[in-house]
Length: 135
Image 1 (cartoon, rainbow, N blue to C red):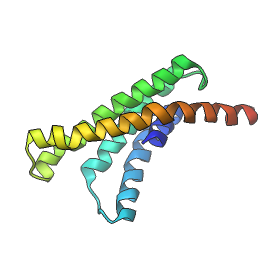
Image 2 (cartoon, rainbow, N blue to C red; image 1 turned 90 degrees about the vertical axis):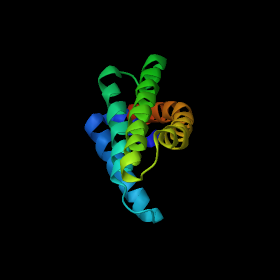
Image 3 (cartoon, rainbow, N blue to C red; image 1 turned 135 degrees about the horizontal axis):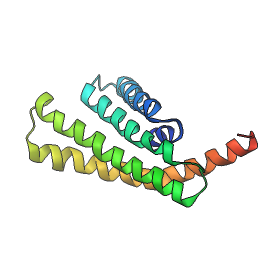
């Protein structure tokens, strides 16, 4: 999730959308889960919303820009996981309580922890590599 949010923040909403959708589809296929379009699209939305931060980020080492990326990432997590969890009511036949408490809440908490910890590390590492290459 942190890599998805980082790619969205670094390269924009289209890259985030495609990375989330394709990445989730491949991950589910490789792990034997099959294709769940709503969760793949939810992960794509997560990356797309995080990608909206690209316009606001100028320096990947600046604390304010790191906070922007994490903030957009957290918003993306909420949007993407809410979409996937609520559509599970129609595709999986679950009720609203199960969608929100059993699916949405654990997904948001887990993804938020990973995002808060790893996105700043990825941004600082990216800035170091980019500066060595003269970008």
